[in-house]
Image 1 (cartoon, rainbow, N blue to C red):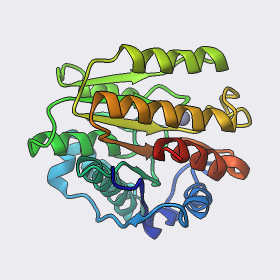
Image 2 (cartoon, rainbow, N blue to C red; image 1 turned 90 degrees about the vertical axis):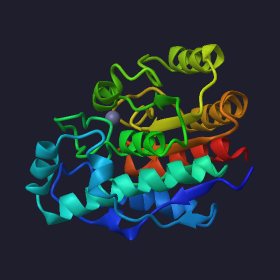
Image 3 (cartoon, helix red, strand yellow; image 1 turned 180 degrees about the vertical axis):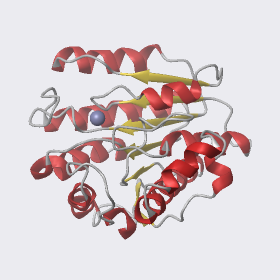
Image 4 (cartoon, protein in one colour; image 1 turned 180 degrees about the horizontal axis):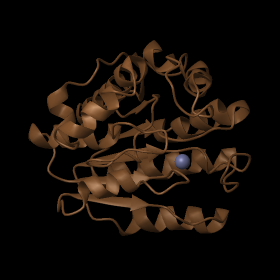
Length: 256
Ligand SMILES: [Zn+2]
C-alpha cells in the first residue's frame, strides 16, 4: 500500500466568522504534529456541481451569504475531503485536516459549525464517477452526524454508523463490533472527531485509544475494502492535546 498521506491547505487557517471554539488553531495544532510525518497533498476548492449532488442550490446560496471567507474556506474543505477520497481510491489512505467540519450539514440545512458536508460530497462524487458503488461511513465524533445520515437516508449503497456510547469501554467495544460484523464495501470514510477526548467535551477516550482505533480501522479496511479508506477532521476542541490525539489516530491508520 502507498504511504498514508495528509491533505492540508493554509486556507483552513482563515479566521472566518463562526463559533470561537471552532478556531484556526485547531487545524494548526494538528498540522504541526503531522506535517513532518506524512506526505502532504494540497487540495483545490470543490466545484459547485459536486456540492449540488448533496445540497440544495438554495442552501449553497445561504452559505454564500455567510460571507466570502466562510464560503471559500467551506469550498476548500470540501475539496480537501475530495482529495483524500481520491487518494484512497488510488490505494493511498489519507486524512484531511480541514475546517469547517461537515457532518452536521444536511441536504438543505446546516448547523453546528458546519456548512457543507465534506465527506458526503466526496463519496457522492466517487459514486457519480463510477469509482465506488458502496461505502461505509464511520462517524467517530462525540456528536451525532445528522447531516451525513440525512444525506444518505434511502441510499442503499451507503451505510452510516455513529458510535454513540458515552463510556470508554463501551465505546471501544461498539466500534470493534461494528468493524467485525460489517459486510464488504468499496470504500471506508471516517468522520474523525476528537471531542470524545477525556479532556474535551465528551470526557470519554484517552490518547492511546485513538491509536488503537486507527489501527483497528486500518486492519478492518484491509479486510473489507482493500485498504481504501480516508478520514476527515470533524470536531475536537481541546487545543493542548488535539494534535497529539490526531497524530495517535493517524499512526494507527498508517500502521505505524
Ligand atoms: Zn462534535
